[in-house]
Image 1 (cartoon, rainbow, N blue to C red):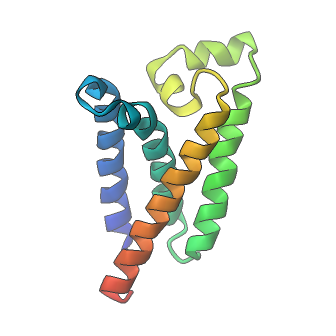
Image 2: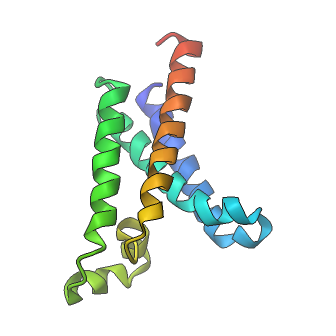
Length: 127
């Protein structure tokens, strides 16, 4: 994908993630429960692809896993100053609220789906 397509994909994934939170009651329970975190990690993946377009898909996967897992494990740290940031809408969206081991699996799934979409696009468009 070209950088402009990565940026467009990031925006679409963000909108899908926000919609999955706002309209979760209209989704099947499994999707409503898991989609937001998977989409967040997918957005992270496409963000790395946007920033590092000349690097490999594998590099983006590794960086996305390190970043996503780092954010999740940072939720074990509960200092007042960072909890105040997490108390804002943007802070909660970026930093999360509390550590959940299942989120690590959700992140892996989102990153792997994002990389699969990326690989399919690269094959179709022969970039």
